[in-house]
Image (cartoon, rainbow, N blue to C red; front, side):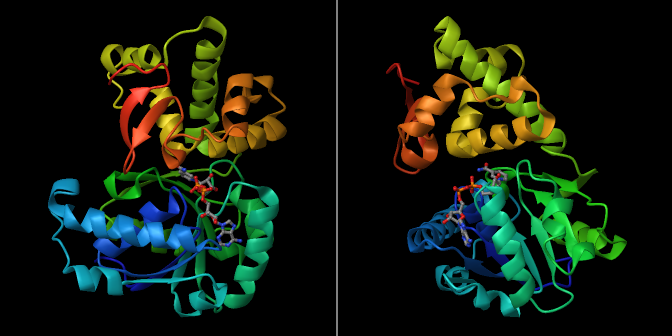
Length: 300
Ligand SMILES: NC(=O)c1ccc[n+]([C@@H]2O[C@H](COP(=O)([O-])OP(=O)(O)OC[C@H]3O[C@@H](n4cnc5c(N)ncnc54)[C@H](O)[C@@H]3O)[C@@H](O)[C@H]2O)c1
């Protein structure tokens, strides 16, 4: 490890947070994961077990840990006070301003002075959250991509108050995870989501308005443009609820109707078709999230 840190906290162990916990553990860190939902914490332990089992295949170069050791490195709790022993905390709770705002006020109370917070948000400016704490210099955006343990780069958002030391600490932390930091400024959606969410919304609108098969949309981006995943597969992986919340934040911020989540996306979220996390989105998923068929039933 290149980082001097040993124990990292992860708050919010949902769709992305679970993968961040796993990434830290398989790279040698001890992790304290906190979530309000016991089921999310249980699922995180299951994910760690599975990823560790196939580790050399999942992430070449990493050595599989003894199962007991892997599990011992991941401590889970529903109580924020468990984070008091952490040297750095990554926050991944739901993409709602009120939820994050309340959490940052609480985190500021439970974390010792000097402990930094990495904001893993899709659209909320880091400076807005930093302002809810008494340590704005120690708050920095770390936009992990999903699933974190497979990704080699991370978008890092430097807030106006983020200190050089905090940024250096995060670069070291990411190096220890085998990742490169791409540092950008602090504006709603940053580079990645300011652009990608227009693309997701328009892809969904194309299915809605033109009746195009979701598989055809994704195939065009994979086979013609050479993307690894199509926009609808990516939206399913992120979670359509999180995609819609992100679009709503971007719509509020930029007052640009291109970010107005389209009717089909809203219908799917309302009916609980959230993508991989619920087993149904633009595609059907069986077991641990493997794409099997699209919603029109075509085999994939
Ligand atoms: N899904 C992705 O691919 C992705 C990628 C990068 C960043 N993000 C961002 O990460 C954050 C989480 O997204 P997600 O898709 O994992 O959402 P999610 O809804 O799947 O998970 C959120 C988790 O936060 C927990 N939670 C909510 N309030 C909490 C609190 N006060 N204390 C502790 N736990 C709490 C929930 O129980 C849930 O398990 C969002 O800000 C999102 O924009 C998501």
